[in-house]
Length: 302
Image (cartoon, rainbow, N blue to C red):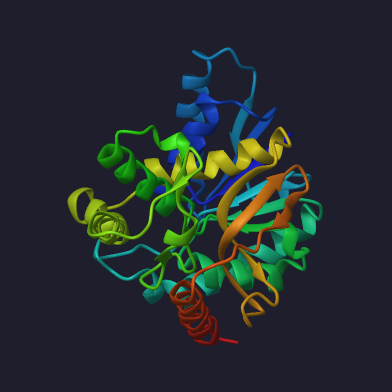
């Protein structure tokens, strides 16, 4: 298998390191506008790979070198500037990057699965479907996957139950309109309903990405391992269910926009999008997320 990572900033480099520690491919290609940066990362990672039980080829190249990639991981982005800058503020500039890179990447890897990481991820996942011509099931945004992991970790510490045993989702936009699907949350078959505690932890979850960015200037490790969770499920056809940004078609009256719902991920990409029964409040929150993302999509230059 060949995996290409486009963008070797903080996030792309962290994903590349995670892919080196857990070598799922025969070949890992790094692409960056500044080729020297990608080359340096590739050499450093190849040195690290020599300490692993792996013969994965790690190298840097241009778009043409990505030909035949089975997985494309797109992390390229303009700099955030202020660490507290809103993700949605990046939409126009990052769309310009997508418009320049994605059609050429899709042309040389027509059968690839594309994982979108760049923000605002929901609007850009939608744009990626349009720009690549890939079927929607082969374009996956990381969406609220990391948000859900953060939320489960906070619940785990509060409840004294391992986070793997907690089924709790953050759904909708990967942004300020995301919501906790309290009506779906359970562990061991027992539901736990909204409380002051769960609401407090949800608010902490929403602000956590901004908090990390304020403290260290960026986020990288969490999103890197969340991305690798998607890659792992694709490579081994695991059919794991995870909340990721996918094209929504006729769910709660919402269509033609990308938002996070629980989706089954396997070797073909998204094999199924689940349609959970949400409470009335959650349905309204989902529609508000759709409106927010649609506004971001409409803000992208033609």
